[in-house]
Length: 368
Image 1 (cartoon, helix red, strand yellow):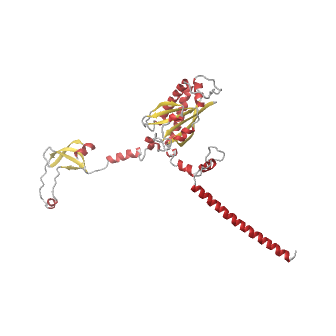
Image 2 (spheres, one colour):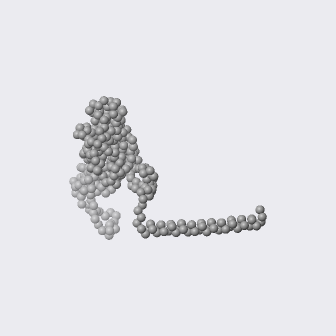
Image 3 (cartoon, helix red, strand yellow):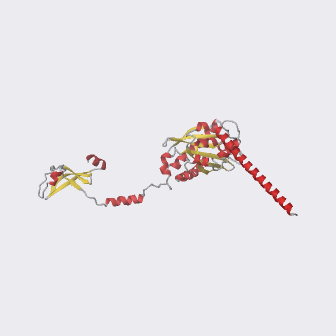
């Protein structure tokens, strides 16, 4: 190849590079211009977001499912929820409850009934009502001492299983389900009796911690009529599974945190019977030591009010006249509190006091 051909090739390559540089600069300028125009259009006009853009913003997955990614918006929404783990006593109470209810429902249905807890979570009450699978029965009960309500949800599988067992259905066969019909009076009655058993065991589960009475208020099949709290209020959700050999179902207990607020301090205990800042052994020891403590007691024969000049003018050997008569009442005082009342007397050559009464704290304060 000659030198002239090399020079021509270099010139062509340089010309192509210059053309490519110009094109890239123009393309970049055009892209920036388009971005500015699009941003100005979005800010100057009311643009409606598409559904896929809304789903992406809220954290929904691409296939339109209900699974949500952990986004900042969701974390902000759920930040107000109270974690039930902060109330350790709830685990002990409901562990005791499932043991008791398993035995009670086993006796109630005469079947091999076993109840277990699937999960305990915190949820907003409105979200829970929207997630209830229908058909189901929702039992609203009242905690009389706490002056609030709770909710028990029993799904259709468990309802049909219990009714089938109570009416003598054969074991080993799944109960027949007839969808699209309301629950009958017999089913309502039998479920109400089962709920009475469940609420009685719930009372017994809370008994060591706090006395409370749970009373069944009503049965509902529409979640809208079972609203016992504001949709945004936090609630404790306990999901339980009931197994009756080859049949069974699910039941859920919902307690708004406003319901258990009266016993919140008790639920903070780590074990049953714990006392905050108190120890029975230490209290007994302290009481014994207090009885052995020496305290000064003064018998006040008289009190007089005088000026500072009179007090400063007192001299050695001066006689003070006391306004106390024989058999007059005087008080024994510890600090500023009157402890005893007695009479002035004389024993030999000493002035003595005879104790007539031991004053309690209330009377001592009134006398003082």
